[in-house]
Image (cartoon, rainbow, N blue to C red; front, top):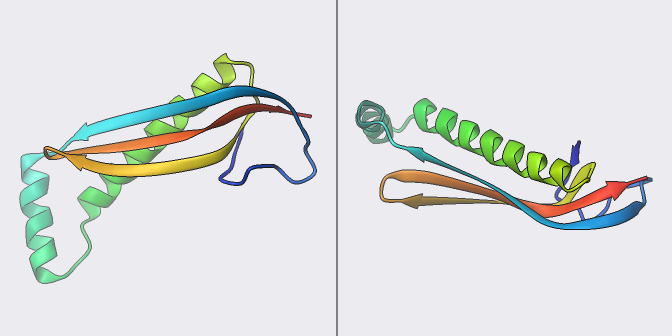
Length: 103
């Protein structure tokens, strides 16, 4: 499935619009990971644990969004937007876009 932030796919006309699709992922923070991330932040390094968690949440949200697009009959999602939010020590990633059928 083609997933793009652009409103169109070059060379592939949109034949049908199926509506907005959304995928969300919320991951709880691990206490030990938080401690090591804090140490890393104090020392000025990158927090690999948080980077990995963000990547997993993003992949989950995008996958869920694609599954919903396919369920509507789409073969692509255009205009994709990713949003990140931290709520009460939990990381939330939301992916949204428009499910379409490309020729």
